Image (cartoon, rainbow, N blue to C red; front, side, top):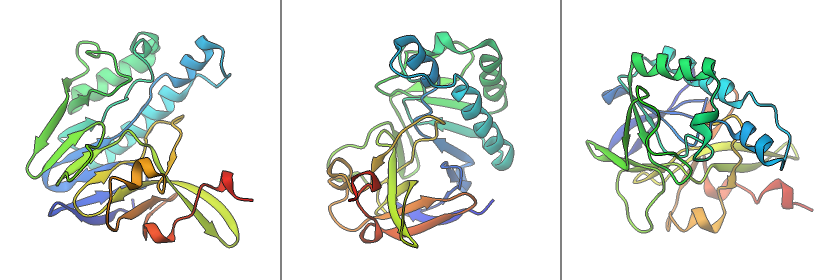
Length: 232
């Protein structure tokens, strides 16, 4: 696995190609915005027809990461469930997988705006935020300076031009003081990294750690483009 090493709040961290954060010194793995059962939510509300296998796919990716890095703690940075009834819709097989993963390592579910409170018994701990050394893990970034803040919520994506083609890729965003993770969920959408909702959190320079198929590439925000959907 090709990992991109970087520093945030003085701590050596690793951005993983699957869109997760690894903190080797603390044996901590962090993922954001799983949005489990988004597919079934759309089916129930009849807004869109999506295959109802997103939870299985997302948990499979998470299990592979846990196998690869063997973390002591897994932190899910909020919006782990797509809506407040999502935990009740998770099929028995996937419920069993969550319980299996939670029995292997410590799970901390950070509360997000979509999440039920609390998740089912045996799935791990629930917290509004947690602090570990110089880092604080929460769902949504606070406005203003926030040294060591690690969050999700925005689902950042980087829009790029490669050989004349417009591409859109999930990305981490960091200015060395704070960090926003990409969405990990199989059906999670994304917000352009240049959107004012995001850029206002980084008043000076910031970088996008762009997730590719097998590697993560670091780019300045100046190398990014508006969303390809808006290109003429």
